[in-house]
Image (cartoon, rainbow, N blue to C red):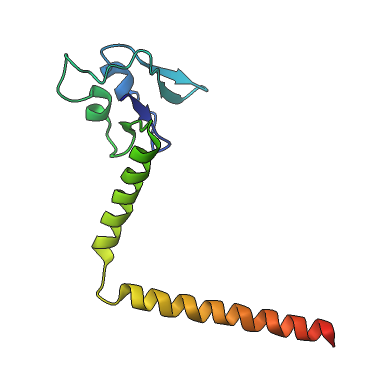
Length: 119
């Protein structure tokens, strides 16, 4: 699995100089891109991909998920982890009550709009 430069990249250039295979290129003037045909994940040379190790921000250089389900589960796990940090025992009950209230308000508004059109 190759790595990719995300839109979180601050274009510091540290990844380009640290890549042992020269897979990191500059495109569009200041945007960085990893050539998947050259990227080896630093296997055999390092225990960690050097682009990710040198990146000063957390999500500037990440593994490129090529499999749909791998990507889906990675997104799911990230969102669930975020929810766990803010989870409260009555979270889903409060969510359902708010959703029901908003839906009911929309139905009432549409009903009023239909009645006013018929009159």
